[in-house]
Length: 104
Image (tube, rainbow, N blue to C red):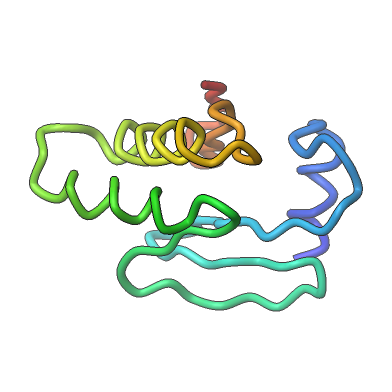
């Protein structure tokens, strides 16, 4: 948990030291991670933050769509950013397996 937070801070992936909740995928599993270090496994779909309802709606409508998982997540975040003023339409997808940092 602390190593993940260190990487995020060192790569400047968060714009402040405010509280953050993150979704992290590791070895074919996904988790939410909060500032207190609480890690919770995700079993179906999960969205976090102010735009979570819009993002989940986008994710549910993309089930079965001919899109990559990355594209589905990006679309969900961008949809939330269109509707909720406090949600940024930009972000990062970090693929640690291939060591790829994808900014959108």
